[in-house]
Amino acid sequence: DTGVSQNPRHKITKRGQNVTFRCDPISEHNRLYWYRQTLGQGPEFLTYFQNEAQLEKSRLLSDRFSAERPKGSFSTLEIQRTEQGDSAMYLCASSLVSNGQFFGPGTRLTVL
Amino acid sequence: DAKTTQPTSMDCAEGRAANLPCNHSTISGNEYVYWYRQIHSQGPQYIIHGLKNNETNEMASLIITEDRKSSTLILPHATLRDTAVYYCIVWAPLSYIPTFGRGTSLIVHP
Image 1 (cartoon, each protein chain N blue to C red):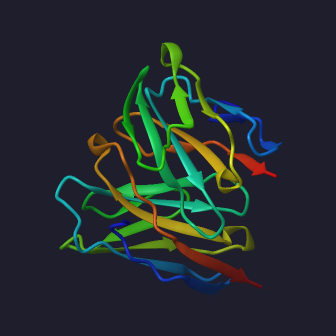
Image 2 (cartoon, rainbow over the protein chains, first blue to last red; image 1 turned 120 degrees about the vertical axis):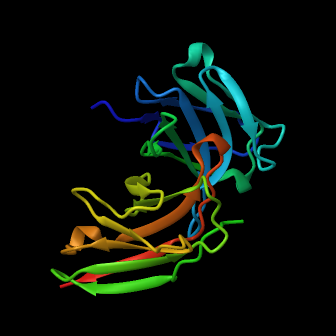
């Protein structure tokens, strides 16, 4: 399968713990996006990379959130000191300049 | 805030055409109209996009009005598997940040 992959698919953690998610984009795509989605809402933009450069961050991305894309390939999203309000689906998408975004299956985070 | 307005929900009989409207009256000249759908608990799936001409692919057709202030996604022969939330967004790729609204929940019934 050459689509966008995300790991893990599900994560249950206790409040205060750190979690890290991984996204592997479609190999030739130079753009990578992270979104968060809660029940009944559309995806909310978190941050965006072009190659290895993080070019845009949403105000939703608090200091506890950090994202990296070393070497412009896979990306990681880390949440430190998780809170119950962080419970959501975290989506990754990749694209080229000229086409739409292709989304991964998401990582569902539950913070107890 | 999303730049598009969509009905909250619609339903359609299996085998019939599903026509999903979207209003984007403030669309800019360089913004495309993109459609995605999301089946429960999965990531959104790209369907189609267009700038000003009508577009068709194996999944759907996209009709954009001449003034570009609205569009319609057409699923010509809806099946039960087309039951999903459909998102219409306007986005200029160079602007980086597409904004999703709540979309239209389409239910296809037998």
